[in-house]
Amino acid sequence: MSQEKSTEEQIIAAAKKIFLQKGLAGARMQDIADEAGINKALLHYYYRSKDKLFDIVFDEAFDKVISRLSTIISTNMSLPDRIRSIVRGYIEGLAENPHLPLFILNELQQDPELLIRKFKAKPNFPNLQLFLMEIARAGEQGTIRKISPIQLMINILSLCVFPFAARPLLKGVVGMDDVQFRLLTEERKELVADFILKAIEP
Amino acid sequence: MSQEKSTEEQIIAAAKKIFLQKGLAGARMQDIADEAGINKALLHYYYRSKDKLFDIVFDEAFDKVISRLSTIISTNMSLPDRIRSIVRGYIEGLAENPHLPLFILNELQQDPELLIRKFKAKPNFPNLQLFLMEIARAGEQGTIRKISPIQLMINILSLCVFPFAARPLLKGVVGMDDVQFRLLTEERKELVADFILKAIEP
DNA sequence: GTCTATAGCTGGATAGAC
DNA sequence: GTCTATCCAGCTATAGAC
Image 1 (cartoon, rainbow over the protein chains, first blue to last red):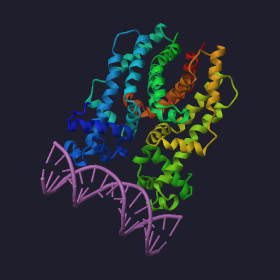
Image 2: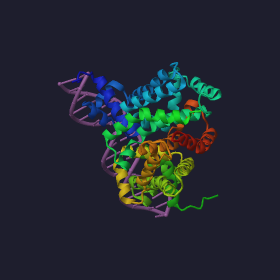
Image 3: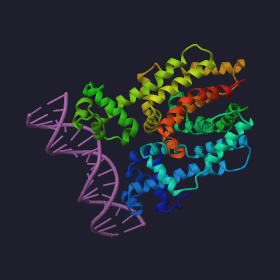
Image 4: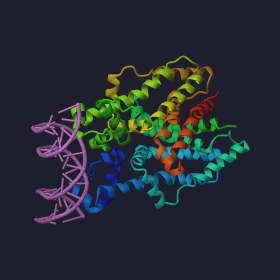
């Protein structure tokens, strides 16, 4: 068993779980303490305040989302191969952290400043401009059908991310259980790429 | 000016605005009272409790989302025309209520029971099964490319809904203002339909 | 470092005057 | 119906013993 974690790590792990599920406003320090198997006071001893603890969790979550995108986007494959990689990598990453999308989107809505602060702190944001220009160029050259680069990027993101945000909906409406959801996302790794590439074929 | 609304209506309007923005956990009764320009006590006088008030708001929001889908989905056009209608109608509807997606998805995650309760109350849910079977049939007949009906449905939904949930992200990352966002969604009404139809072309 | 106890505050809900 | 004042539960945060 990996129960050899320090108290600090246990707290972070617990905070991650609770905050990702309930968000900043919905989470209780008591929940986090319970999840970590320690006392409420210890949370403050190590991390001072709820906000400070939240910041750490959000930072890590946000990093996870963009760093993966960053590495994939800056390889030098052909555009189609790159799109396939992005889709595969992104869905894979989210499958390991299914709560991430809703968490991030929600907190950003609550506090738009958050995004700006993160950017100031992290200038190593994936070079979107480059990717967008490449899409434009491919359109000009006829490698792919002409399409607004931003719109295509939004489409890619939508198809990758949305199902994870809509998970409770799928559960409720189609009666999908965890195993079926897992299979669904697994299938999407190729299906979504096929879908996109077919859509932008010249 | 339409300032001829009864107090009850003012409260509901205010509650809608605040709850949609901040969610159940994040909203304060005081916020709602301020927004409505009345006293906190009046909220309880009319609607007893925060939860009761929230229920009304959620019900209305949820209704809006499925009723529109319901009417479009059960027309008898050809599949491509129908898809185009769905996309257009859905994006149009969300453009009027951009906070709806994140609000609903979020509350469903907080309380999955919510969905089940709503279904019990409303058996007039759009006939998804029928729509899914039609996609399957079209695949068999070669009218469209073969694709898992559920996956296609998820794709359609993703492309329509996600941009609204990701609005703060687009604002922050690409520096998109409200006007640009409005144009973007306007363009998506046709762009998304084209994208999908091209992707499922035989 | 970790716990118990508690201070101090925020926010939902109620009482009662008008 | 609408307001002011207030109650009380629940929560963050701290004090202090061990």
